[in-house]
Image (tube, rainbow, N blue to C red; front, side, top):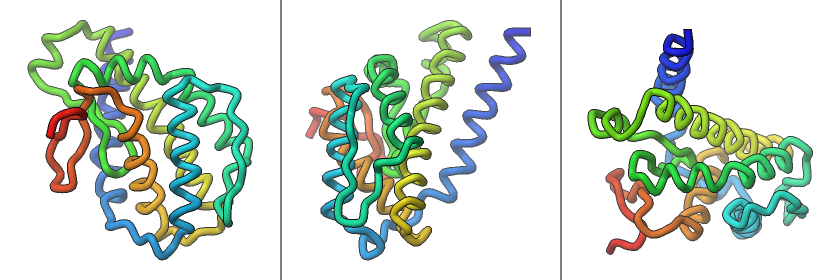
Length: 185
């Protein structure tokens, strides 16, 4: 029964990633947002997550509304999960994408590197992280009364700020859509 439940979780995670990719790869339109204020908010949130700060107090800035219970809870949950996610990113089997989400790099090597229990746990970590990120992105969009066209800009700004807090050797999506590694030129 565990095996079937694990397969369903992995299938859902993979299916959702493929489906959401089609809707989140739009070109960011920074005219829709208060870019400087949003960058400050994103930097503050990503720094709190990287420092495992679960007591963050978010401040609204220049029309960017982040002081809502769902956003605060999502940031705190991400901070609590950060070490697990970062350890998984260290393995090289996950990467940060420009759409502001983290994806698992599946394949033969990934299967060989661990057990099905490990893969189930990794899928749950990534799924939970992506859900919390969506809560933050969509929460900012709605609370700030931004147009839906602003969503790609919010995602990209958070991605760019997150890169500053990633450890050397962790993977991310480059401007041309390829895999880059933090610390490599």
